[in-house]
Image (cartoon, rainbow, N blue to C red; front, side):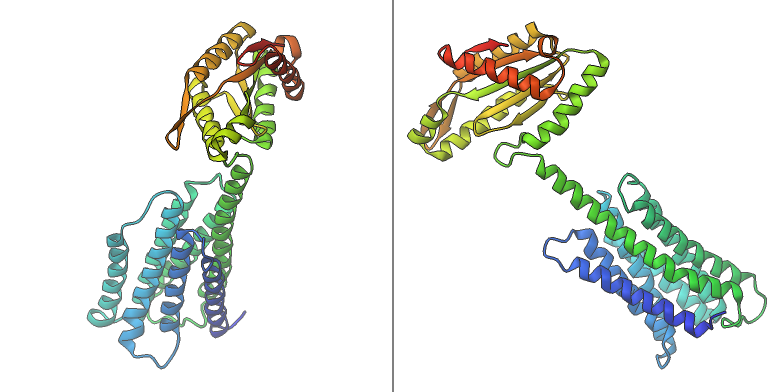
Length: 377
């Protein structure tokens, strides 16, 4: 069995190392606010833990300030967890958590002096706070890293509570260096700290990865899906409709004489035309439909449960509405039209590339017919 001093050193070193890892992660310019709360909280915990375990410090400093700093650090970590979950923890609550620890430490240091009681009740209090951190993080259990963080908080809280209960059950003075239960908890705490730190970092990494995945499927100019997003969402929609044997329709839309708009009014006007067209198309779509920009001025609509006749009516309504619209840009009103090709699953199947190819041919038929037209495949 490792000695108490060795286990204590391992705990202090682990706390410092995990804190350094969180601080390094929080030092990036675009690091999320929760990462900074976690780093600050762990830094405060490290200072408080050092005060309570290092010699040569006045009694009241480590007995009162040390435990209060640990409570403050856990409260800051809890605030970070709540921020990550889209909530927050009021600073008044952070101060209340710290004040409770200060009062308990002061009571068992000045009024009813007892090292055993002070350590026991502080352990129980810190354990419950870690459980609350784990519960708060667990509300978003769909994120990778959350189970690891929850397990770490739960294990850390359990070790602290077990240590507190064990101390309360002992009669008379307790030799901290010879207790097997305390030794096990001292060994468990560093493992739980590592688990918690890894889980917190993975939570942030998963959210960044999801954000990057979302951005990689979005057209930056219009906010519509790009080709990659269309292949993903449009392909899944087509597969779902095929399994349900529901109608699927695709509209291929191209802005007429777009190069002339850019040449006559400038590229800023052309960009504004594309943005306005995107907004107009979105107004006609339902939540289950898919809108994507796949080229310079070419858009695709994938319509859920729309038969060929309804798709043609929608295309004609869009064409007429767009022809009546004008886009204000630098004091000028830019008028434009579109050519639309319509294709449905009853004639071309459910393979999205095949549908788009057929719709593209119909769209070019509309252009050859004089533009500002709707043609069916």
